[in-house]
Image 1 (tube, one colour):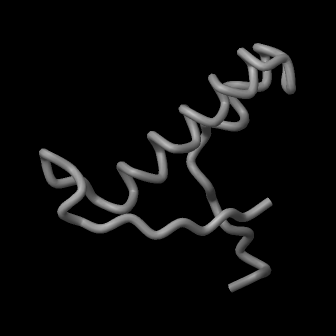
Image 2 (cartoon, rainbow, N blue to C red):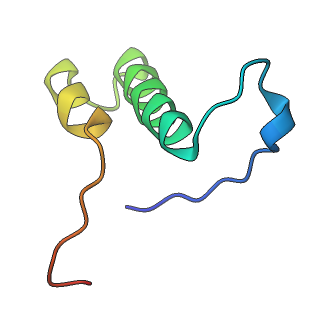
Length: 58
């Protein structure tokens, strides 16, 4: 699943790279979904893992 969001760069008190924001959003979503019971706690590691595109898709 791919989710795209736009956030103003000046929204953060400390500048962040797009990769930092993506990593934090994946972890936050995983924790939120576990708290709601949508996913098992064991799934957090997979959900929060950085995205690595398939070499075939390049």
